[in-house]
Amino acid sequence: MASFIRKAASNLATLGSRSFSVSAPRHAKVSVLGAAGGIGQPLSLLLKQSTLISELALYDVANTVGVAADLSHIESAAQVKGYVGDSQLEECLAGSNIVIIPAGVPRKPGMTRDDLFNINAGIAKNLSEACARTCPDAMLCIISNPVNSTVPIASEVFKKAGVYDPRKLFGVTTLDVVRANTFIAELKGTPVTQTQCPVIGGHAGITILPLLSQVEPSCTFSDEERAALTVRIQNAGTEVVEAKAGGGSATLSMAYAGARFAFALLQAMNGAKNVVECSYVESDVTDLQFFSTPLVLGANGVEQNLGLGTLIDFEQDALEKLKPELSGSIEKGIKFANQ
Image (tube, rainbow, N blue to C red):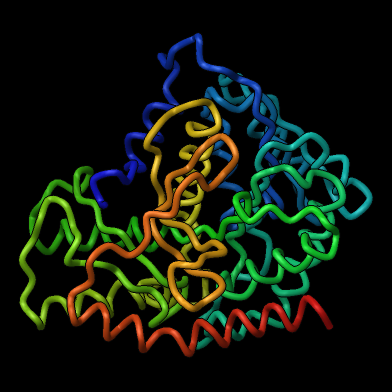
């Protein structure tokens, strides 16, 4: 399964390169909601380099005009425009093919993703409502934490509006994959750009489950290594929050991961085959309504869910342990959306 996963380095190099085939379509409008924030700015910088984006629409409650002006000086094809405040949100979203939402407050030392819920849940709901009204056919990629709850919120919003297509709603969990690949390569000495590890479950703490038994190139882990590496991947966000000592959360690596996922979607929307990324989506793979697994992406979003693959006992046990927490987060999001 892991052999199908498209590597971020390849996606970024190909889609950002000025030597990319001139025959490639350049028609996509991508909107970033929260574009002036710690994730939104570097994410927008990476997106500006893609030859598959013709229009980059940047929205936030402040400062997006300046961000857009800065990015507009870069010698790439995408035209950039900034939009500020509620009155300009629907203009920003009109005609979007992909909408990426990193909006919300970042995590600070001592905070969990659930601590962010009361603020970010409302932001995710409001922005999802605008998307449902204005660009219901767009691919919606949610970065705003807690993703385990904000994606169910968006699904309920789209259902209420009568425009829900589960193939087009994604929780961006790509950073978990990026971290897993990096940490495995550091531990085992494998080439990092060729190391591929699927990560399933959710996007917080123990709900993050790296399938180390399915890593390619194949690696052998002792029981101690497997346990320690799993915990490090699960707690990697906290590692960054603590290292920044109150200065923010994982913004740069999240921007990279968000761009990787967007580029994969763009490739698939433009006809590329076997484009696979892990993402948190509505799923019937387990008894949980939403779950992250490797997905084959296509022109209309999720083309095929590749499921769990064969799990070893350690992974099967971890899967059962994560279910109650992830189930609670899903229920919390659904309840919030319907209150």
